[in-house]
Length: 250
Length: 289
Image (cartoon, rainbow over all chains, first blue to last red):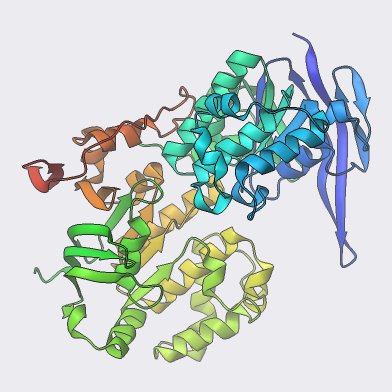
């Protein structure tokens, strides 16, 4: 299977009060067409920075992001922006609090597809399993799970080829989390969309993803297919992560 | 009420003025026991916790009563209620940073809090904090004490708030999603410390969470809430191995298992009316009567 995305030797550091912190250190991996790659690690391991660099929200200090055979620069063409979409943890905060969900989604859609492009909000709502009446409401009057579904709707409105998900189920309860995971899985099955799913919860990642990359301190310490990472982890940190999972013992 | 009972709720109904958010909640908690209240967002878990705290952002109790440490809370003045609550109950909130003054060092806030409850001893202060911090996986005690809460992550604040509860040696810990801001490894450390708190120090715990895995790990008993009612209450192991209420089964199916398939959750309506009856010893389930 060919790669839709290749990340090569990405580096990124931040400087604050003359103290330099290396957030990402020579990170490389590939994402295949139609694949869901999970990235797990603790807070501060560089997961979110990695997604911000891939999406073009930030520029790397070194390294490259190759999408569909082309290297992407910091200034992205509209088509590339359409193709790589990102969803954030706090979906409520990602919508304008004083505008309806429908107008926020429509704005995002028009900025990507051009003014005058017509959004079929009803079928978009059906796709994410929500009643389109809810889109006339403000984000503050919706639950976390509903907001997150609308954030997914906004991201998939432009039919992207890669979806970047940054801790998108972490703030949700188990019921909403299960529904979001099901939604992502069916989206992939229907559209063949590739996804990078970042989470600190290896149990959640293991249910959805084909492959897992484990990050620590700005490095990928281990990557492989989900089954082998879970059943035969090699890295000590991966072993520690797996051992710390608390499971419901039926 | 048995001698060991530290908290009992008797048919508690409470809300915020537009009807009750929780209704007919009856349960009791013994010294050294951990009870987890599990349910979806909006089911009334946090309202239940705030009703017990009763100091700030408090719901209006429309019926029923709370008995804490032998005192019937409805019979106390607000001032005495406040004194009893702050001396006997410790709290950990979902956003623990908000419980501290963000621009005051932890050291000053710890000393202030301990002094106000006559629990400050200058000699043992540092050694006991070091001990508690290391148990919670917090390294570099002196640096943390010199820092201010705004400089710390949510996970750090959550553990520091837990440390203060341990130092205060309170009788009851009330916690709202105490591990939500933590990664898997730290979450396990904190869960182990919660268990140690009740087994070593006898601190009773009422923990509100949507995390069934945490609940089944730390709790002696689990209460499942739906639409403001307790739909099932049973010893933790029994509740997860033989759930009786359909809603409990639905929630359990939504829990992701390591290496398992994608969890499912249906929005099918479930019954949340009726009476809590004892189906077998210690296992209560909501049934239509």
